[in-house]
Image (cartoon, rainbow, N blue to C red; front, side):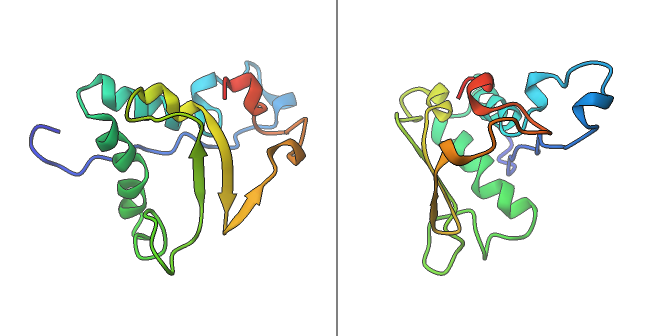
Length: 129
């Protein structure tokens, strides 16, 4: 960070074995989304300002996979995938966990209509968001 390198986070998502084939439960930090939130919080703990951590996770993550022309920032013509928070993450980076709405490809996702018993990951309530 001090050298001015572009910083991003890595994905925490993998499907892994079906739950009935696992010998031990998957650690919480490997649950879909939770590892990313922990990484964003960790960047602030390491010295980034909250805005820098958010940019590292979103814009720079998309830059790292070569898709910045399609997504990663809010611009006309880009994929409309948004996560709207219920509190300002610039005041407290832990607010990245306060997910109010999710919009995927321009459509509001009704979170209460998502599967109640997912096969490969814990429900959001069990992850703390």
